[in-house]
Structure formats: C-alpha cells, structure tokens
Image (cartoon, rainbow, N blue to C red; front, side, top):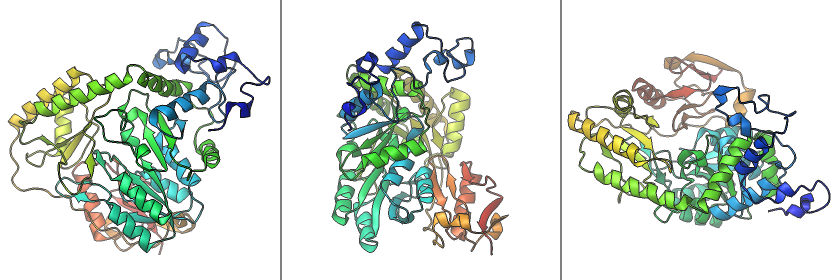
Length: 491
C-alpha cells in the first residue's frame, strides 16, 4: 500500500483535517449535508430533497470535493477505508469497486496479463471473464468443472484437471476460477493454488458470490487465505451493502498493484458513487463491532431452516455431502431440487412468487435458487419454510428423471478477439450447425457461456440451448436474436 505521505497527506500542500477524521464516510456525508454547503458541483440533483424518487439518498450524493478524497488517488478517508477493508478481509491491499465485481474482473485480468498471453479459464466462469479475454486479446484454454446432469449445474474444478491443462499448455500465465458458483459449489482453491505455483502461473479467483466466506467460523474459508493471488468479492450479493458494491483484494506479490490501479482507472467510472462507497465502508466498520454477531445469527437461522424442511421429500435441498463432484459447499445458498416432483424449478419459483410473494434469485429446469444474506430475518425463513412444506405436501411425484446433459466443449476455430476483424452474418438457428459462432450465447443467470465467439456450432449446442430456452431458462445472445437467429462468420 502506498503511504499517505506520498500524496502530501501530512504535508502542507492540500492538507485538510477531515482527511484524518476517524469517523465513517457515511457520518462525514451526513454532517456535510447538515452543514448546508451550497453544491456548485456534480451531481445535478444538488442534494435537493424535492426529488422523492431518490428517497433522500441525494442528500448524501456528492463528487470529489475537498475533504472527501478521490478513489483513484486516495490520501484521506478513502485511503483509510481501503486499508481497514484489507485488514478485516485479510488481504495485502483492497480496492473499493462501485461498478460491481465485473469491473474488478476486467481490471485484474488485464493487470495480470499481456496481450497475446494464454490463460486457463474454468468453463463456468461469468461472462465478464470472457469479455476480459476478448478485450485484452488473450488466448483462452478451458478446464471443465464436474457436472450434475441430474440437476443441470456445475460442481467443482478439480486440481488434477488444472494440473493436466497447465502441463499440456506450459505457456499459460494465469488461471481464473469461479468459487463459489452461483449454486454455492466451492473448489479446492488451496490445492489449485499449489498447482498454479508449481507451473509458475498466477491464480485469480472470482469469489463474487462468497464475500461472506472467512468472516465467520461456520463459513467455509475464503480464497483470500487459501493461496489465490487476487480475489474479487461482490459485497452486495450476500452482505448488507448496496447493489454494485464490491471489493478487489490483492493477496500476493504476483499482482503489480500500480498496474492494477491504472487499469481500475481505465475500467471503473471516474465519478464513483460516494453513497456506494459509504455502504462498503459502513459494513467493514460494522464487522469491527456487531457485524460478526449478525453473521452468527444468520448461520443459526440457516441451520434451523434446513432442519425445518428436512421432512420434505418432493422438494428438497441440495446438499453435496460426500459427493466426489463437490469439494465443499456454501450452505448460505438454498438450492431447491424438484427432480422428485412433477414440477420444474421454474414452476416452483413461479408458484412461490404468485402464491406466497416469495421472490427467488433464479430458477432452471430441475432446481430453483434462494439466495440468503446477512440481512435476512427469521420471519422470512419462517415464511419460506411454510411455503415449501405446503408445496411439498401438494406436489405430485415425478416418474422418470429429466437429465440436463452437459455437451462437450465446441471446437475452437478463432480466438474471441479475432472475430471483430471478420465478416459476419446472421442465419436461422437451424441453419447454423457447422458454422463458426460470431457471438457468445449464455444462460443468464448464472452468466456462464453455452458457446463462445470463435467456436464451431454443433448439433449438441443447438439442442441443449433450445431445450433450456423452451423450458423457460433465460438464454441470451449478444445480438439478442436467439433462439430464432444467431450470428456466424460469413462463408
């Protein structure tokens, strides 16, 4: 971490006592509002409370004015806040993100690679990883996690598969793994890290869905402490922070921090939201007081909830147990399996929404996902327990399991970044087999690609993607014409 003195923090130039204030950023914002300064600066609402649709958040919404620091060159309150976050999360350095984990993925991958580098990506990584590969002109190789055909989602990335890929492709300089997944599946990051080190590759873990990991003794450990070189956490996914808040953690000397900061300035807005940053700072400070007790209450409620629906037979919770396809599991994710009932996961989520006013995070053919968070209350778990029990009692049994087969990776004809220099055309989906795909297609959520730019379309992909779409899964393409048409390289 660069020292405050480097920016004249304690010198005579630009010194402001507010920069040494130990109060939280949210407190400073509230005091600034009460002091009645007239804002001849951005943003345009001028903190005027007449705009009811902003619900008075505008009173805390400022720009980089005197005493409130600058995220892209911090010397004061934001410098202190990021140092505090690094200490609490157990990282060498931490960086606040107000554009979500996506901006951390883009900046970190660019900072840890050079154009033309080979990278190893878990095939279930988020679309932001694939966008980073394309934007940075990288050459991707893929490692496939284990897979649950009976449910339709990925398991863990196996260390031996990473080792095999790195042995076969020694030019790989960076490995990118998602852990935990959208469904809560965790990979053996400690072993994967050891494999990467043995091959001289760096490891970046997209831990967006696991910001809570490592913050409570009953949670699984975080990749931050298991040997990853860099980790990104989306605080807003499971912790009490506003949407778009995330933190990027530097965990080893393999990351050039100056290069990282430069790329954060490229990809992240030059006008970061102070409301969002106050949300991050507020939660980090809360962890120093009552926050860890609240996490303990969360885990207590989760355990009671799981016990309360253990008697359900047709709608039951996924629990990896000793299944060899899963290294570890984040039990804050409630994955309701519908394989023993006559309903799909999509129908289950629809009924919970329409009949019980319970809104799930996502649903697919054989399961529906409820994301819990530190802000959940007992009444919410009680309502969900009663609803699931009632649905389970009334559900009809299913005869014959509907497997969601995972097709083999399509053959790669071009690197993703090479597609922009080619002539492309749009064809009917039933005429696309054998053509090179010029756009990526993914199921969102979770945002993992079914096919990537530059890969050859085969019948398995078409069958799989259309089946998911017809079942109600949100399958998207970049040109937004799926399922009728798809963009391919012109012949």
